[in-house]
Amino acid sequence: MGLILYSQGGYLNVFIPFTVLLIFIILYPFLAYKAIRFRARYSSYRNIRFHFVGELHVAYIRYLVWALLIPFKFGLIIPYIAYLKKEYLVNFMLFGRRPFWFHGEAGHFFPAYFIGGIIMISGYVLVFIGLFSLVYPSILSPQDAAEPSNTKWIVATVFIYAVIMVAYSIGRSVIFTMIQNYSWQHIKMGGRISFRSNYRIGAYTLVQLTNLLAIVGSLGLAIPWATIRRPRFLMENRYITADLGKLGETLEHATKHEAAIGDAAIEYLDFDIGL
Image 1 (cartoon, helix red, strand yellow):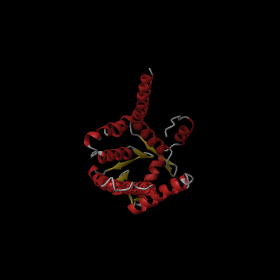
Image 2 (cartoon, rainbow, N blue to C red):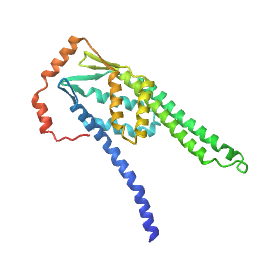
Image 3 (cartoon, one colour):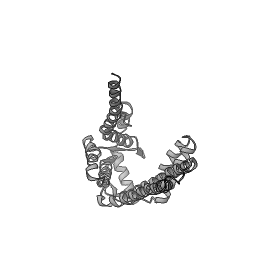
Image 4 (cartoon, rainbow, N blue to C red):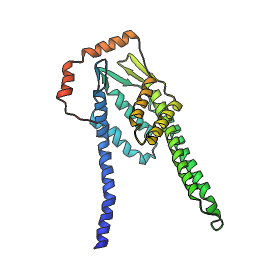
């Protein structure tokens, strides 16, 4: 009886995490969809609101259905999925009634993920080499070699975390900066206004690493500071390219379609919580 109960408990302990993971995977496209709508709805410029008009079933196709193919394609379609997400986010976004248009190509996403992936893998290779050099004497001659001291293991642990953190941060920064710089150059609004960004890999990596160190060193007290610092860096290196006449005309056209009753409806009648 005890063995049966233990077995049932063991199965239950394994079943619960997989169930929670499965529920999260199913809900992830819905949560992403609600988050995009929420951010758009409560973002505005000169009292003109943004709107996201994408449909939920498209989010499930691009965030879930395509993601299920990743293991069968050995992860090689991840850049294409990132392209589909970017296209979904931009092409269904409105500024007032002015649509955005993303005219980039999926092929430009692959180099960013390839370079970033190589950097991340290199970090794990360095960790493997470091650990192997630490235990190699014991493997070569187990009778004569002494076990690594606690100090060496502590240094090795710090080395592992530091290398992985730096490699991951640099790799993610490469992917982010390359894709963002390319994407913003291929986004237009209303066919008249274009954008560009000038994100540098080193500067963005420094922001990410110093934010992480500040949060860890302050035991979480620096989270508000880090939360503001990253968006500030992004906005300071993002630009709008347009003639003043076209920009003013676009704002005037968008303003005509914005009514005060819309704001009132959002504030008082809309119970859609989002994220």
